[in-house]
Image (tube, rainbow, N blue to C red; front, side, top):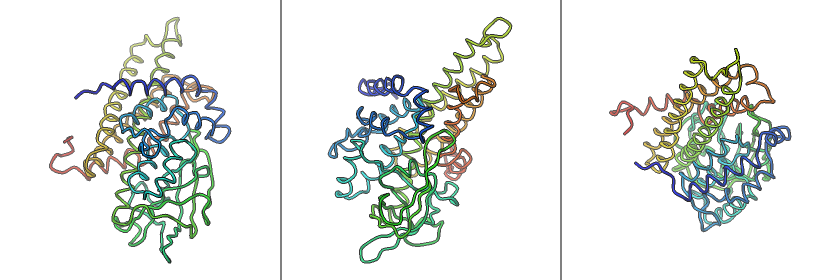
Length: 380
């Protein structure tokens, strides 16, 4: 199999890399964290690059690119630990709207997403769900042709800044049944919508969002709602895998540079054999993560069961790699690694948040185990 990137993909990577290195340096990121964890200016700059329309169909003003191009972009954004929720809007929500939105909904939202003027995010996580997607307490009822949603969602990316939410809500059945879940679009300005924003550990922004008889637009009915949610979450995990690879790649380079600069006993500590062994182990974990990120991206087009298993397998490896590379980097830096003024600790916080998002390593290990059948977990 040929894993070389095309010329267009390399040009896309180069454009994003240049923007990250020149316009999104560490000092600017720190200022964005201090101002709330989200910058409209940075969002507009990414829109000017054309990134917001990357996955939007051409019919709605986008470029209609696929998962590989998205992976390329996410690696470079991860390299700069960019705070703005690019994947949540331009990949995850866009995929849901493109697959399940009516022609009217798509015309209303996709062109605005492509130009960077609208933020639509998935609001699915609930406090008691523990990463189980079928556990949905939020309820939706229909009266006189109008759907209304009641419930609450947690850790919604830039939830207090978004223009609309994609909300899984139950129309029938018990809280943890797989059947009876539908997908709705709810505007933040709609009646009964309340948000409370806060900063996450890595400095990015999220919010608690509640709905009280909030008017909603049905996107996917109960026959397709859970599958729609799972498909969007799988897109999110694949994007986060690529983002984590970019972050680990840069953190590894920072660590190696530090080892070659910091001296003890008159020589760089990078010459110490024990530390070189640890660096080699970090590199191995990084490359394992990279290969599984590729695997997750390439499996996004597979049938439901194969895709879900592949995504969980990738998340397990990425979780192990993120934890190892992050922890070893801090250990090799020593005390300076956890200071706010030094960038390594910010990468570690970012990787920790990624490891816990959309199901932690143990959760996805359980998902892989459940899907082990006649292949005993060996990749098909």
